[in-house]
Length: 86
Image (cartoon, rainbow, N blue to C red; front, side):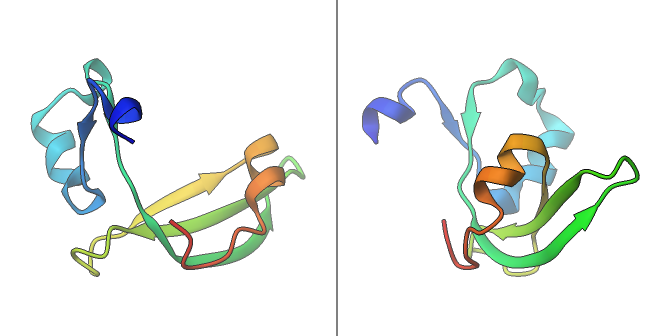
């Protein structure tokens, strides 16, 4: 994990909104971790393609969630991932 995190900045999901307001995260190599706290049943987009929506939380502030939309190959590969997975 130390090797994977070298030269990267950890930003907690619960801090993401405030960090986006004060920092240009496109210029920083950053990483975050989250737990899938809710999964919405896969949906179909207007173009007919299926996608998933996950609600993620860092378990530090349960009121601060981030919605993650999974499309294409990512959806196909991960849509069965269980709630509670990090």
